[in-house]
Image (cartoon, rainbow, N blue to C red; front, side, top):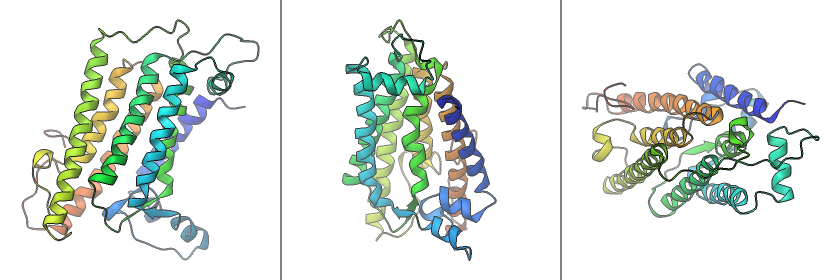
Amino acid sequence: MMEANALFLGMWAAMAVLMIGTLFSDLLRALLVHGKVRQDTSFSCRWSDSLLRLEMRKSGWTWFYLAGTIYNLAIAAALTLWPTHPLVQTALRWLQHATGEDTALVRIRDDVVLVIGLLGIQDLRRFLESVLVTEFGDSTMHVARLIHYLGIAPSSLSDPASTDRSAALVSIDSPALWIGLLLFALGSFHQWKCNASLAKQKRDNGYRHVIPRGGWFDAVRCPLYSAELLIYLAFVVITGGQHTMVIVVFLWVLLNQSICAKYQSDWYELKFRGEELVRWVLVPGIW
């Protein structure tokens, strides 16, 4: 039987290949890209067209963010409060591919548990953003994007680097911990601020598309994606750059957000042709 770790690595690799494929395939772009830059298309092939219909309005993801909050925080709580519970150990032994002869408890590193907890906090923020801040339009998202949100916690737990039988606590004096938490807070704050700015500008302009201004919008065209990269970079820093699956997830997010930023930038150039746009797309001074 294939190990869970190899299965998840294959999943992220496949998603990366499919995301690159959106540059060449209308079907893949419709499946994996969301919002106003999503490819609006249909296919004569019944199965392809049926696959495309597995979608929902972006506003419906408000409740998914709530479910994601419960999902990730429940995992973090179980690993913190009941690490030796039989159900927890059964799940961890499967994820870690522990053999029946190995009776030692599977213990998860505290920094990995912290990352999963921060994922739950991020989902909670996105839920509150959706309820209190975001002005949703009529755009839709395909349910295929659920794979990203549901796959991070179990894939991280499947990595052999997640286990630490000494179960040492995260050192409060660790520079990596504080730098990572600072990056997470910075990315989260500016993502919230950018969404609030977008919502206000939508209301002020009669819900017409305009070039966003102010804050990080004056530095890059796609600051929401830039903030997302900071959040996932924080997870790499917190785990000391030694957790393969966390790095793999960050690389997936980097690829995903870069391609989405390209689509967003192209849309801006087409929609606001002749108007002055910010030079940089995702990272000031680089691209």
